[in-house]
Image (cartoon, rainbow, N blue to C red; front, side, top):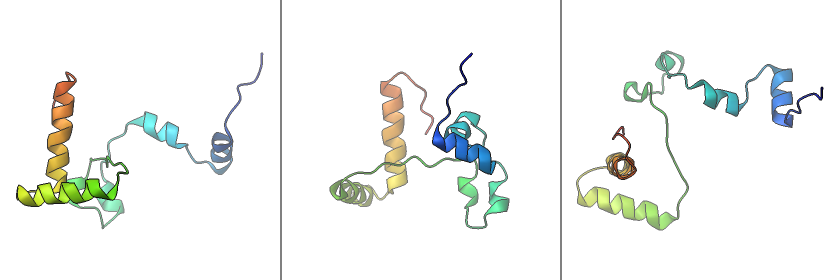
Length: 95
């Protein structure tokens, strides 16, 4: 029976005793107790994950303008947008 081929990243990780980012993503472990490991993590971020993307600078500027006009912040604008997107696609508003 042929041996399963592994990627270079997996092979290096195995040699170094490090899990790959794919294995990490599949674990889905909550970030409990991480505040103890890093004093720079705010308590409001414990158990949360960052969701980000790269966009043109004009997108960032427009978000900042909208946040100022609404006396809000970009985090709240993104929460609203994500919840609207989830609802539009028949999913629960989780953000």
